[in-house]
Length: 189
View 1 (cartoon, one colour):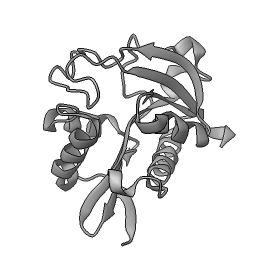
View 2 (cartoon, one colour):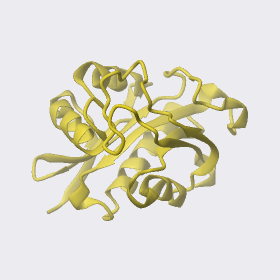
View 3 (cartoon, rainbow, N blue to C red):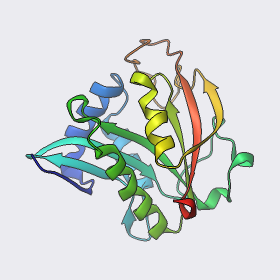
């Protein structure tokens, strides 16, 4: 079946939430958080959020905050970034259904978000990649796209205020997973 990459629309929210919670753990996404993420993805009338659709089903998605639209938190290391914070987008989440991984869908979603972020005026993007993903695939995929590791953040997703009901698929409510803060510079691609 053919998979198309297109901009995220409101009609996709239910399927995106279901897929996100299936892959990342219950409470990872809910309607209020996805509405907020969608609002933060838009700059200059351009959205940086994309979905992969096959046979009418959402099989993947990439959520990205536009440069200048998101708050730098304690898990960010702006002194290690290659450009000013106002020129950095934030790659929030890349998710692909388990049965379709390894087919390049994640890369296509990332490239779509990079193209949109560049059109919005971003020069680079930062992300916190899940080190404990199966075979450390999240870090591997982002590295193969040109991402560079700048810092490790142990227990990044443990009891975070904006996701109080999050249950990690590996650790449950006491998440011990490590986030790898990685940067992708667009003019180096």
